[in-house]
Length: 102
Image (tube, one colour):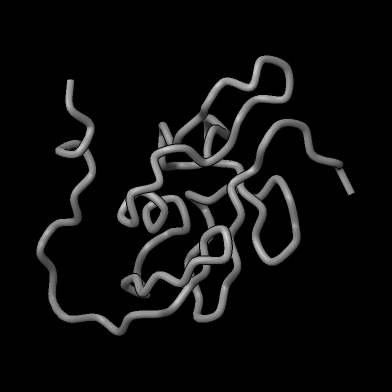
């Protein structure tokens, strides 16, 4: 099944955009999105890889239940992307493998 058709943003009224950085690349996204939605809209289907097998994980539930959307936000690891609204200047890193708890 082609994945390019699965995640498209719906037409909406004009909203202010914010600039976020995903893995050090700038993306201008609507300021109404969550981090997970912004990742998907920018074409990043994978948020993290698992610590044990390195399996790719992507946002699944989009409501804070599954924890598959964990990302590093502004240097803080293990943040739920679906529960965090984007803001101008935010730096998001997709997590690879195990991260420290601190």
